[in-house]
Image (cartoon, rainbow over all chains, first blue to last red; front, side, top):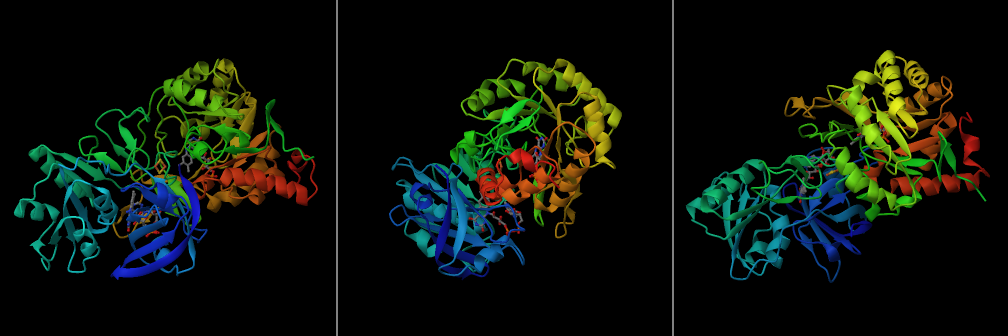
Amino acid sequence: MKYVENAKVISQKEISPGIFDLCLQTENIAKEARPGQFVSVYTNDRSRLLPRPISICGADSGSGILRLVYRVTGKGTGTEEFSRTEEGGSLRIEGPLGNGFDPDVAESETVMLVGGGIGIPPLLETAKRLKAKCRIVLGYRDSSLFLKEEFERYGEVYIATEDGSVETRGNVLDAIRGKDIKADRIYACGPKPMLRALAAYAEEKNILCYVSMEERMACGIGACLACVCASREKDAHTNVHNKRICKEGPVFLSTEVEL
Amino acid sequence: MISTKVSIAGVELKNPVVTASGTFGSGEEFSEFYDLGELGAVVTKGVANVPWPGNPVPRIAETASGMLNAIGLQNPGIDVMCERDLPFLAGYDTKVIVNVCGRTEEDYCEVVRRLADEKVDLLEINVSCPNVKEGGIAFGQNPKALQQITEKVKSVAKQPVIMKLSPNVTDITEMARAAEAGGADAVSLINTLTGMKIDIHRRTFALANRTGGLSGPAIKPVAVRMVYQVAHAVSIPIIGMGGIASAEDAVEFMMAGASAVAVGTANFADPYAALKIVRGIEDFMKEENIEDIRSIIGAV
Ligand SMILES: Cc1cc2nc3c(=O)[nH]c(=O)nc-3n(C[C@H](O)[C@H](O)[C@H](O)COP(=O)(O)OP(=O)(O)OC[C@H]3O[C@@H](n4cnc5c(N)ncnc54)[C@H](O)[C@@H]3O)c2cc1C
Ligand SMILES: Cc1cc2nc3c(=O)[nH]c(=O)nc-3n(C[C@H](O)[C@H](O)[C@H](O)COP(=O)(O)O)c2cc1C
Ligand code: FES
């Protein structure tokens, strides 16, 4: 089921410059959410019509608390408006949307969770729910790391920073090759070039690689065909070579889609 | 008792609220939120004789009180529509309007013929999509071509035909008259207004298609004006649309001369938008002591 709720803000704090950590009280959304799914967040400014898709960073089925970690993209944006919402205020959200990462991986397997920048948050709930062994590779721009300590509860964490200020200098792939991090499958979220490089790496190692994709969205539920990505095979729903990221995705097997 | 029933070309809708083509798929996704039987009709996404892959991404961009889209009429083709979507819609107590697109007159006619024996109440012929190079708009900006394609479609159609008009013309009444002369049973307007947005940081177009169709509240005054003009130019019924986001907006279109209204972009801002407008119209009627919604059509 999908729900539209006026979710109360329980807490919000800036955990790194421009990165906000928001906890919302939901009735059903957190209860039914799977890791890697997302919600549509609506702005209160009626001149901004479209919802902002934001991944689920945490979903506690007991308390109904939904956690979103998002980046303010600039002045006068919807995300800037969200960042000003105070405790006790509320935000209208719709979800849970999309498919998410499959958390039911055999305990004997090792999953490599790879996040780049604002692609890191959705991997946290994924790491939490996985029973398989996790190796976590996080790529940041500089030493303003976020969520790192929380990931450490679920597996070994490796860091790559573009400026070399923490651990491996470079991107996540430099860390993976440099530290020779092995796994049976990859779950990844981050910028397109990172996903492309990981898909190539997975092919070389002959392992499965699941990537979470992004595109501009209008409906967020599969009705408008705004958010498609090219697919290798003809898709069962669209009957052409593309898939709806909001509905069939955002998580795809890297070999299903054109990256 | 109030009556919200309206009639379009002999087809009775339980209320004047329908969905705008392309914003509601074939209804399946929105049926997770409410009973489609609450709507006057469901209008499907445009369908062609064969599957169309649509335009490259980005296909949409947000603008002040509106959005640009250049989906490019992606659709799975008429076979999938008949096998999957129409049987699905037949399960709801609502009317079904299939929106048809094509590249050539023959493409349109092929789809219309295929629909002859299907459970479809009305056909909406899209000759006004600004986002595809061939077909679509080519018929919608030239009165002669519009009249001719209307005649062709009418000659093969079993269901009443609504011609969907483009606002991207000098005089929309001329186009409405051409559709009427071609035998159209109704017209719907407006489709989107051609627009452009530039991403100044990337120094390029926000949409891969460069231009897109503007929709949403930003276009409402233009749409209301055009509905009013067309209502005075032709005697066939009008389905009005363009930026409708509330019951008050819907009433405005009806007072300008529309017999029914379509809700489009508002579905993205709130999946319950069309349902809320159905309810809001009932509330408005009670508040203003209106017994029959038809009494407000063209009331201005
Ligand atoms: C499935 C999915 C999950 C996401 N998860 C997160 C997350 O967990 N944290 C996070 O910070 N960001 C996430 N994003 C990116 C986030 O949606 C955009 O940064 C956000 O929409 C920008 O909105 P704005 O109000 O800041 O910008 P504005 O410039 O005001 O946005 C204008 C319009 O463009 C859209 N838009 C702008 N940038 C993007 C983008 N990169 N992707 C999709 N739409 C965009 C907006 O939704 C809006 O409709 C996700 C995107 C997708 C598709
Ligand atoms: C994403 C999107 C897709 C659309 N697709 C179609 C279409 O396939 N056929 C059509 O006739 N009109 C299409 N339209 C136009 C709408 O049906 C409607 O005429 C227009 O958007 C104005 O109404 P609105 O402001 O309520 O959205 C589309 C509009 C949008 C926003
Ligand atoms: S955003 Fe509408 S189909 Fe994905």
